[in-house]
Image (cartoon, rainbow, N blue to C red; front, side):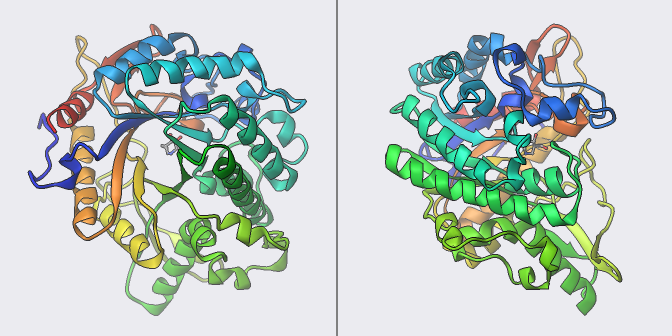
Length: 442
Ligand code: IFM
């Protein structure tokens, strides 16, 4: 297989459908000496947290190589580039802007604008300033207000140059992985922390949306949520109940407050000490209208009932990607259709989709047929959802290039561009060439 193809009548072949590539600051930038510490610096410096004991100090050296990388993005022919802003690069601890950090991003944004590449900014992709973690991080309600303050200053600094703002990327990961099971920074463990941090993240989203509506009503403003659809191991009542519980806990928890102004029903089954601290007016703030919903999808999960813990996730069946996630594109179209029927969705953008594969480079060529096939199946799934009536207006491949894959370090490669971490040489993989061709043939 060398090509990515869609039916000739597909809406995804209209020029108005946006194709892009996505990255995140901590995963690619490096340039640590030019910013304050974030929670991921601390986490990486803690023994046993990162599979290859690596860190984000150099990463893809995008801090220095950004001009080449913008040219690379342009060479792929994409309509848009989704990047995230490192909060500790643009803000000082006293609450003022760090102009050097702001200028760094302005240079990138200007270069993208010069090339007619639409700029999709994510304001928080997990690199919380360490000084805020030192006062409680997302367990401290004040962090939500600090976020809104940062969003106020940065959206004014970027005025007129950005196409779209996403407040948060995947609050599920920040709260559940970071504050409940501790496999992500800041590495806090305890069932009592997950929902509390999630609530403050969602409050931060709502407060930031108010700021964006005021400062930059002309941009498309929203949030990016990830979903791992839940499937039952059997049709037994117990498995169905377990699966529904998991879905409410892992997926609906982050979307329902935004559209329905309340948490899923299971909130009443959670022990008091696990409950979020919801103050009067919070749910109205969280349920601000949004201009778009970003959806990230990679895989599904299968659940059965568990006598003590309500649900148990089964090992993922084959076929798997290199990170151990099942390839099951049917869950993607089913997810999109189901969210569309449950909620009054604004236009949807697929803000991340892609696969980690065990790539090798041979004489400058990366034949990642497995990733290419993943993309083909998942583009088909998006097309199916559109045909079933879901208003999907764009698709971003995760990721532009191989990068720091969080707790997996540099061991897992998600890029459509291969990165040699010794030389920082970038090589477009076969999947990247096929993506480029799909886009340019529209
Ligand atoms: O690399 C991450 C990204 O930062 C957030 N979404 C999932 C990707 C793959 O794990």
